Length: 190
Image (cartoon, rainbow, N blue to C red; front, side, top):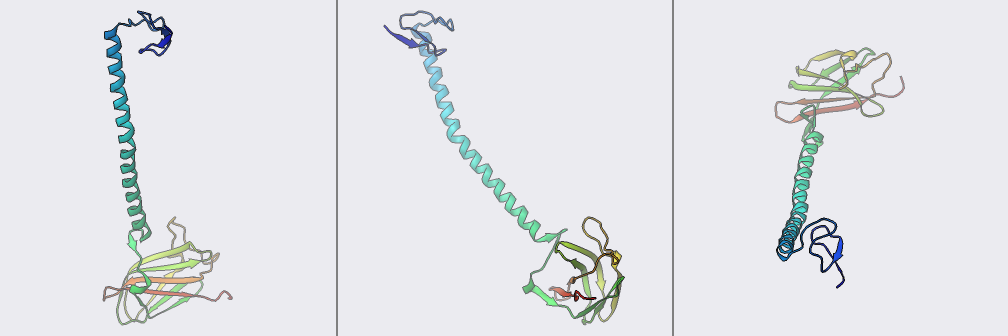
């Protein structure tokens, strides 16, 4: 008869061979049956892993995407742990801001104290913001703040001799629980 493959090593051998020339295994019926059973078991295991593994990977991918979405949405809504209010939930503050060249004078013309106040100098191009946080600004009072007290997140201080403020923003808490806001700019000609 013609050649056939050894059930153990896969090499072509003579059909009448009692022993594989390549791997040396005896080719009796009992040994062949055991090997075929082993191959069937391996095929079942492989097919199980092929169907189960992609499903497991899909579940892990969905979990990672959910975690990513949740963490990015909480990061977008906060700056250093402090959420910024939307325009709809804010009260416009009654204030006047003056820049003398070395200091800012902020007048709280409201009838209530501002608390948890964040003041920001905004330069152009946007993204170069300098800020300072003040616990309380009393109603009807002025607050003088040196320009060099404003810092960026990287600890760089505002230098009034090299930089000119373009816009000024105030965020604060009000007694009603709403956020207070103010935003204004200066003329570019000086």
